Image 1 (cartoon, one colour):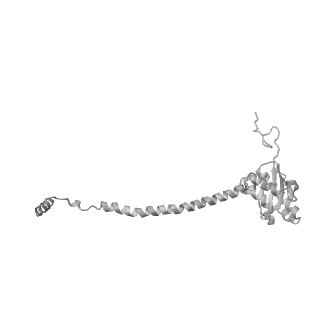
Image 2 (image 1 turned 30 degrees about the horizontal axis):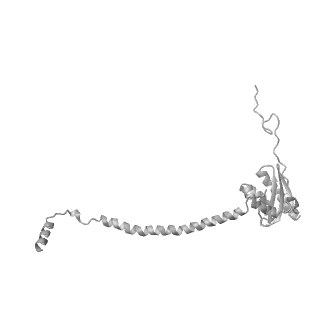
Image 3 (image 1 turned 90 degrees about the horizontal axis):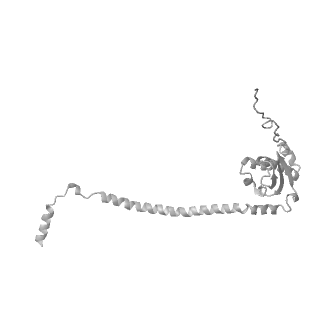
Length: 219
């Protein structure tokens, strides 16, 4: 047994290993990142799991808001307006008519929270969310400080949305005068009870428009 061990030692002693055959640091470099990345992946996975409930809660809140908005839309909103106006527009107590250009608006005021309904639709939807047109409908109410005291119901036809919005403004002002004659002084001072009679001038024969003429040619 001693001979075999000595022979093995002599055999290994004759082997010449290069100096670069020292333990290479590459395995250590490969092991370190693996040991450090594992917790990072775990942390990212835990963060994603924590974010999922938050996103789900936000989606549920958005769905609830959409559901509430859809409660008064379409046929449901039409039924709601009819319930608020038993007997139709003509049977209501506080009514008025406003005109502008070729638009005619019949307005009904009822005690409420300041909502505006036009042709059985929400004013924001009907007026395409135009801030100026929506402001026209509430100018008389804001002037008197009643913007959150009355609901406005309107049936309007003719003209465009701009003319209809201004016709609604005149109708609301006239309806507020019916509520109390004391409102007339304030509304008259702001010019909200004056009917704007300006309309588009008719086209004339031989002209391109009301007054625009074709180019003059001497020869």
